[in-house]
Image (cartoon, rainbow, N blue to C red; front, side, top):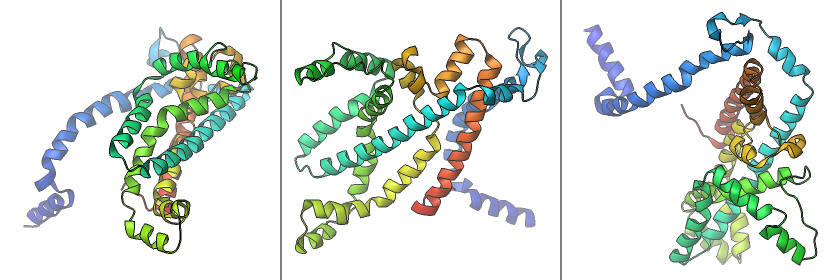
Length: 308
């Protein structure tokens, strides 16, 4: 009798009676995640070895924290961290602002046909890979490209956007914002649909125009969504956009454009320093995991968002 009661309580707790099919559908995804995400984690042992490709994991010499000691003594490492933080922070701030402003402006459009046309045009860059976007951006920002031709027409000397340390970070931030702000605005547009029209009517009766309605009604109504997305982006502070940087950068802008991920790529795949590259990647992953935990705690604290 006790076993039957325990079994019934377990079934009710996990909803197996009504949700067993959903759990079954999750099976293949769980298996694939385990195979391709968790089993390869054994490879982090390379960071503690004098890894030899011919000897493999089992026979390479174990040297402990040697590569981490080398990492912290490498003078370029702190430059990489600074570059990564500046670029990722700039992308988060610019991306958030652009998405919010675009959503607010698009929300004011009454013509549905025009609204959908604008959304479609703005969303297109998001679905293009950085390989394609890199070619487009390279043509636009070259010394003979459209942007520099417009600058020359205005009496300004051409700017080498992709080869100047003064401009390269701004180029990364603005091009990433251009590529993704339309897609990021979807969440804000969804949040705007939940704002009661009675609030706008009340503000209008009090003499508030469109700008005052936006400041005193719209922004406070979606403030929780803004805070939530800003906090969740904190978990990706060390991800400054590997594909974008890899496509656009060159040795001339390493001082301001080289980030942790591209450094790992060069050390590991180009210079074959597998152990050192793994140590850098492992340290980044540990710090990133801490940031993710902190971001979810902040999301629960300030936005009431919880996964579990």
